[in-house]
Image 1 (cartoon, rainbow, N blue to C red):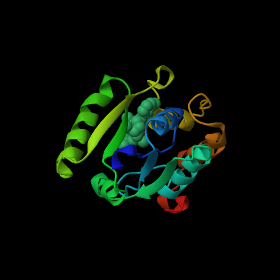
Image 2: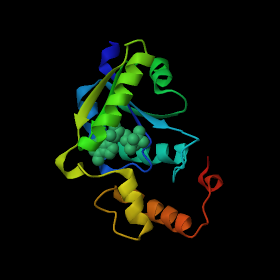
Image 3: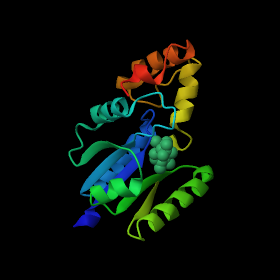
Amino acid sequence: MEDKKAVYAGSFDPITKGHIDIMKRSAQIFEKVIVGVLDNKNKKNWFSADERLEMIKILLKDLKNVEVQTFDGLLVTFMEKNNAKILIRGLRAVSDYEYELQMALTNSSLSGNKIETIFLTASRENLYLSSSIVKEIAINEGDIKEFVYENHINIIKERARLIKGGNFNEKNSNC
Ligand code: ADP
């Protein structure tokens, strides 16, 4: 049944322990979870969509019912292509609420009320964790190991170093 399939979409720039927590919990609820990595050319990301996809894949190799894809354009189109009607989003503090509500209502209306958004609350330890905070800490040479998986610490630190030194532009990142 289609309803056993869900999409979890975001920028994941970079993927954090908070995102992975939502993916693992979703994988226990749904038969199939498709992680959609947004390739938004208008947004300045630290990592290209392909890099972000690879970073996620490494962490999900034991979760057999989770698949990762990149997409651009509208999320509703991506969901239609994958024949999915459930969208998962993570909710942290109150500050997420207004934006998430706006997105949920917009996606519902763009899909002719076909898409339902389901919110999973962030786990206590990830409540204030975001990709932006990780980037902020990394650029200031702080310790990010509490927030991201070990496999990614060096690549994030290295990217922070390039960005800080002004030696990074989109072309460096396999875009
Ligand atoms: P976007 O760029 O679309 O905001 P993100 O990649 O930052 O996407 O996040 C994707 C989804 O994961 C969003 O629903 C966001 O609220 C959720 N999320 C981000 N960080 C956490 C976290 N620490 N715990 C739970 N959910 C989170």
